[in-house]
Image 1: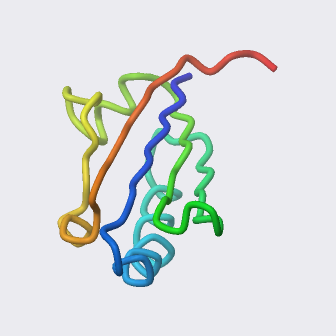
Image 2: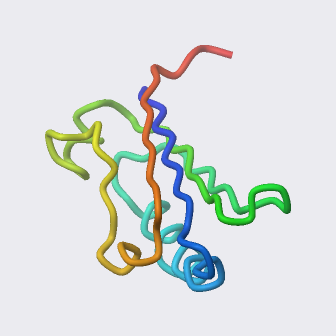
Length: 98
């Protein structure tokens, strides 16, 4: 399984608007996506008020590529969030046995 960590930092002053998108659009979309085993959304904390994240566990690399395409290492964004986000990072890991 593939663990995908996606993190965004909003533009200053866009935190509330992005939070609405995150809760109303992004979380339901990811939870309903075929190939995802688990979705762990992360909301901001007081010390990082502009940072949001997702940790997603994908069944396999083929499932991830079916959702984002061959260029799975680049952060893919919804057009609705493009003007709200200052920075995006994405990392991939093999899910380790606990």
